Length: 164
Image (cartoon, rainbow, N blue to C red):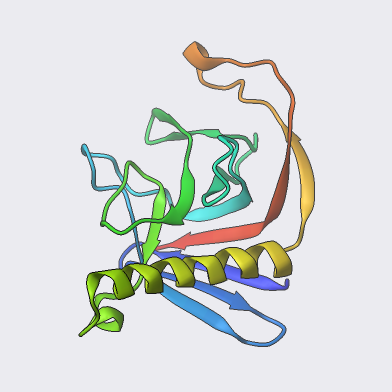
């Protein structure tokens, strides 16, 4: 496995590691917290290009019996989970990364903003160049009121593991 991507809910930490060189990037990260949305369930998620088209974010597909942009969590349907850079904390469930506050000490707002964007650019580059690239086919046909029979093709890059 060329890359390992891990998100710890409890530690609010994202780690993206190139297993061949041991180079790693660590960022603060959150999932959930807005509008009473829960964080993502623990487990493995497929990292994919963003199905919505915004290339700065990745799509995350829960690794269950039907890999797609929809999943059931505690009896509720959820969809549209993304993985990206965000300057604020919290989300509707997506994993949003940003620099650790200590990494931004004594920086001006513009310098801190650029540091965050640069770190996220490194994460994207590592995932897109070192991840195991594969094209999968999927359908968003599980949520009863959002069934879509279209068969989509999307590029994936490996897995993200959500822990504690």
